[in-house]
Length: 411
Ligand code: PLP
Image 1 (tube, rainbow, N blue to C red):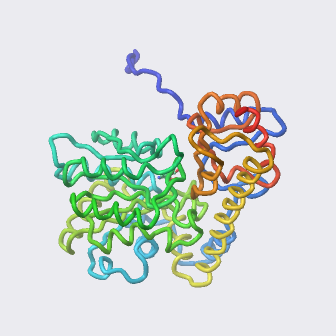
Image 2: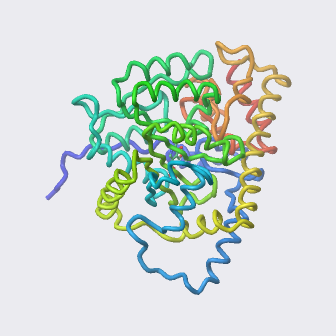
């Protein structure tokens, strides 16, 4: 008999579906700007040279075995990953108030954090709610809903100006009840590529302090925004310094190119060492029932890179290569649309400057759903319906083809 006669058919994941359509497309000049993964100038996935070096060293290490890791992960990995977010000298870390748990990449960190909140946070009202930016990484909605918490949107992006709706953002933070949980992207906001400036972060921080909000940081792109790991952690370090209650969900998928190894961590900054220990003990209980213990390979690779000065320098070069190529593509696309083709900019903009102002892996082009559909159907250029493109999908061989396609669908 059918045990699940009433299970409705779920829609496929839109990004993965887009990739499948791209793969099936026979067009010789097809372009995939959907998925958020780095590609070389040849349009190929990139195994970071530093990861290759670390991997060779790991293979030769006779002490490496396949025993279970501790429930909270590889200690040298979580310690080093913590240092990467909070910096070498951080008061919260020195005071023992930061606890870290290895997770299944950024997604696993977001899930574990959301689950912990669902179970233990004293929400300001009867409703369990976590605030997310409008728009945000689509999975945030699902991750939060899955643990019985309601995602509530705060204003973030202004469609008219293709820039930050800073006033709307601050107003919504002000309007939220005291002690609300606010999910913020550490840097390189996905999907918009629109980040607050340092001055704007200071004002956002003031509201967090004033309203005693909890900062739920998602950091999936450290290094990808500016190419500088420390600068990209600036927002989180500032919040920790000013003692905003906070956590950080950290992913090494993008900045170490370790997508399928699922390397990440959840860092919680507690008020004192006792709270830190209690929180860690409960995260450990949750982790045990969810995954028992995390996988080791990627954690070994990352901890070697973070603790060996030579590998660390080499990794910083790899990051510069990736972020630099993306910035070059921003410049190239801007020059083509704005100067060469004189493509009419989106309504509300006087030029295509937003392509260069935006930061990190993604760009919100300002193309409308109709134009996006035409790009997919008539030009075999694959991008999401909201007009987001992965800058890493562009390269010196296809950027002109892409710009011309945009020019055609816009006119
Ligand atoms: N958070 C954001 C904002 C992301 O864009 C992503 C990946 O696209 C993630 C988290 C998690 O990625 P992963 O689970 O591969 O580390």
